[in-house]
Amino acid sequence: MNSHTLPLPPPVPLLSGIVAPWVERCLGNQRALQSAVRQYGSPLNILNQEPFRQNIAGFEATLDESVERYRIFYARKPNKSSLFVRQSLACQIGIDIASDDELNDALQSGCRPENTCVTSAIITESLARRVVDNRILTVVENFDQLDLLQAHARSRAIKHPILIRLGRFSGSNNTPPTRLGFNPQGATAVIRELCGGQYPHLELHGFHFHINGYAVQPRLEALSQALSFIDFARSQGLHPTIIDIGGGFPVNYLQSREEWTRFEAELHRALCGKRTPITWGNDGLGLQYQNGMVHGTLATYPYFTDRPKWLMLRELLHSHLPTGDTVASAINGRSLELRIEPGRALLDQCGVTVGSVVHRSDDSNGDLCVGLMMNFTQLRSSSADFLVDPILVSGSGTGNPTECYLSGSYCMDRDLIMKRKILLAKKPTPGDLICFLNTAGYMMHFLESPGHSFGLAANVVFDSSDEVFKLEERGSPRGGEHETY
Image: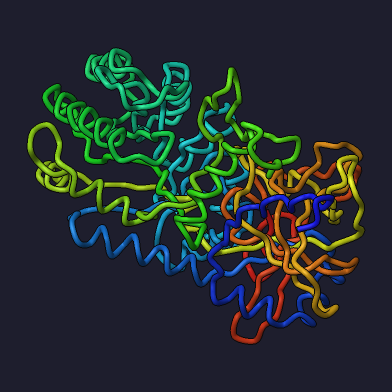
């Protein structure tokens, strides 16, 4: 090496995403894909229902192994498309509702009230009236919600079904903190007041919890206490029959554990100044460098797991409670119905987001920035970044692999589609497409914003049989081919 030649910086670590077969077919037909983007605009959210049905079947097979009575409810909140509401109805699973509009969509799509469940953190006067009018099982987590439902049920002279949400668990060092749900003292007080006649128009059907994170142990501890509350409520003359453990079944996005491990190691090295940055502004994505050490934890989704979806559920069902029983045997022994509410896990591999390349430019540090016709809210959830490599779809020949950042259409530096520097197969040219994998769960819709009046992304369904893109229109959902949000 010439003494005046600087060594090349180390390459950015890869995070190769899993590519579903339907996505391979979709990207393989570049002419049809480019035509769809020209017709519907960029970014374009592309949906496919086949993985949704497969994911339901995977959960059902696992539950059939161990549990005598169960129901699956699709948690609607991670995606706005009515496509998956319709698929839930076709597959005979329920819909988990978190707002008035979600309830509208479910009922207008043909879902019967008994096949819905409301788990909304906020129960407005309007939502309370509608759930009582339709006798929809409602999760409650505070006394104001109990009073509101009691008032509406009394006005109709009916008993309204409820589940008590448990949120804080005594003696547990593993369950994460939460603002949602009753603590043990509060839950005990609700049971006593139900028995004492303070809520004569409410009927306890069981208990619900939803644990942040994706670990089995906190869920095991929560289940243990929920079963104790089942037993206590029955001892007081009530008849709960449902235990609802919510969702939080992890999804695996990545092909390789080794790439995930290497990315974390390289991010640490970058923060310590031992290599060139691999994120914009050397962002630690939740990690911080202080006093010669890296502190904290990644504030991102755990994009690699070796026990995704129903494998984690199977582990939980076979785990042993302090009594020595497995979770499954404890549920079956009490003749309980187990309910789960997967959202992201049912949407695994059900969608991609495609953005059109508009320009290339260098930033003040000399790094290549590729500008896309989209903004950062159209690929964002609560995760600090989306840690899955996108795919370049280009018809302009070959070239050398190129490192770059992907920037958006907002007039601000923080509008980065991804904070991570990525490696593309070649330098993109205007008109090329960038495909972001597995975005149906939260990423495409949860935080989307029409800044600068650019408008929200169109949503189309890719029909794998004839490779045709069909628009899912926005508007009032009334059923039929063109559903809305």
